[in-house]
Image 1 (cartoon, one colour):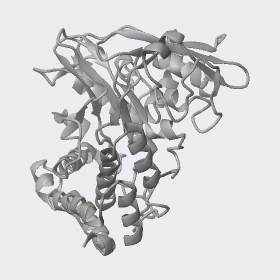
Image 2 (spheres, rainbow, N blue to C red; image 1 turned 180 degrees about the vertical axis):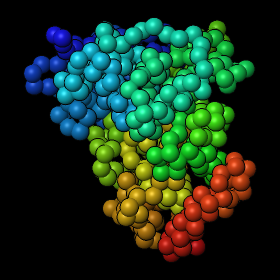
Image 3 (cartoon, rainbow, N blue to C red; image 1 turned 60 degrees about the vertical axis):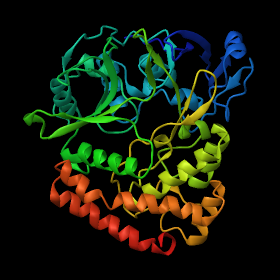
Image 4 (cartoon, helix red, strand yellow; image 1 turned 30 degrees about the vertical axis):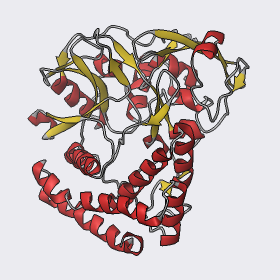
Length: 430
């Protein structure tokens, strides 16, 4: 097959009222990718990536690293892990090898299926635009699990249409009717809500209890005063091996009073700060400063501090730069996205992907006071009130796990390790 690469793409944005506007143009030569803002966008809206992009009509070259030759804000539109697996299988069916596919080709394949408000045209001819009106979520989940487990080479077109956010777990962006959890769609239907549904596998660290454990962590985080998105558990078929799957309500979509779907621009810390999420490249000190500056509020830095304490004490050590995001409203104002991808995820050496002023674990009292100061707390006593709230929420874990019917062996293992981390950090907790 003679494969024609995508060397030029139009970048658009869906606004919160469902209307669309042209943002600019992406173009690629043999050396690198360039972006140029549209003049009309410059006069009406605000910078999509204020730490990286100049807000003018100049031609801006993308850095070669770490985002596959793209500017970070556009790299955010691409999936990784599971989403790339599905994408590569579709290209292979067209006799195209993954190493023949550029990042621009992948953006064309994503089209309007990315998380957030950005879309790309023209879309790839490898992408089947046909949408399913309604189909069984049970069938989709079992098929996703079979693909993840390597049991089949078949890819449901619905899975591809569903798109994917980051991460390695099998998942799908789906629309669930308000009055049913048996059927779903990959396109917006009036009366439905947008969800990210996470499926399970025996190959995952927590096996088929991945979703249940994440639900427990979200419950604890909410008790700790942290904003999390709404979620629900969907009953899984017996053949899947799971009791339930976790469905997270998407926070990058809106629905107007007239029933039209809109979007909110989503930007990860990975893309915003030029960080490489595949390796430890982010520090909470930098994240606190960037959040306060971007959101123009000390409260944003203090919220990062609260989430940092939670991550440390519950062993959410997979706290890399793609697991922190910001939302930009149509008027240009930024805010922290709700807490997401938060679960029990210990690493081999017990170190976090995001460091604590240079420390991967067990930060000293001096370090914690320094981070609290950067977060804008007027005193350490004020910061300790936040710590106490987080600690109190974590004491509810066993109770929450029992309510969610998590296996007692799993909950006991998690509880034991959380108790150990608490003891290791008593020098600044108490």
